[in-house]
Structures are given as structure tokens and as C-alpha cells.
Image (cartoon, rainbow, N blue to C red; front, side, top):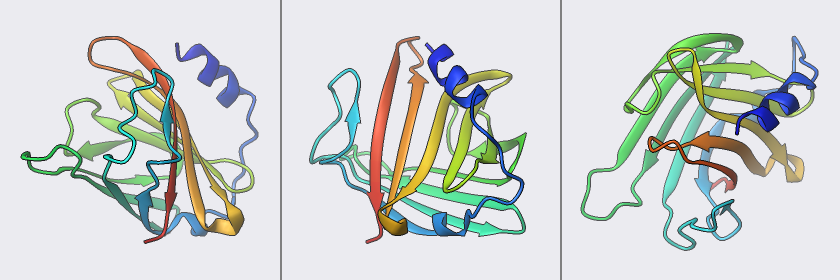
Length: 156
């Protein structure tokens, strides 16, 4: 499952000073362009907003997912140094920490961890001269099923 992503990440070149400032800002999911490999992406229904701050080699992340009507929005937050080490996450029990690394060019590697186990591995990439954030990854559900995803975000 994650072997494909691990191979992709293992072959990536890492940069000590990648231009990551472009990731900063508020991003809203473009759910008409986004997909899941199992074909069950909630087209037209997904409501996910993320706020990203970049400072002093830190990625500060806060997301609000209010897709599930009648339930409180799910909020996830973390402040991670972009050094590939684990940092705690708030707002979810699915994973307990994240590891963030800047890759060459306009990419980040984000690993969502439960202990030492990778639950979700993702590459974030800026596209369209920084107007689009694309997240591609592979994740495993709590039931043990894996799926790949491609999500697109734009500034509101």
C-alpha cells in the first residue's frame, strides 16, 4: 500500500532551502477536481478549508472540515518544524503526529503518523504559479483499507 509512496518519496531529492512560502495562506478544497482511487470522493459535497502559516522553518496548519452536516466541524491543527521529525497533532485520533519536509522546488512531504506507523503519506505541490495547491497521497482507513487521493485547493 504505502510501498508505492515510499518508493516515490525515497527517490525524491530533498532541499535545505526549498521555496515553501507559497504554501502560506487560506486554501479551500476544489472538490469538483479532487478524486479518491475508490471512486467515492463526495463531489460537490466536500467542504474543507485549510490555513497554512510558514515561519522560521515551521509549517503551522489548521483545517476545518464541515462536510458532515448535523455534526460539529472536524478541526485538525499542528505546528511542525520542517525537519522530518515527529510533531504532535490536535483534533484527531486517527494519527498522533506529523512529519514535514521541504522537497526541491515547490513541494512538501507530509507524513501523518500513529506511533511509528505511516497512516497517510502525501506530497503537496504548488501549481499554476502558486494559485493551486495539489495534495497527492495514499492513506489507510481505520478499517485497514488503502486509497490514493488527489485533492486540489485554491485561495478563496
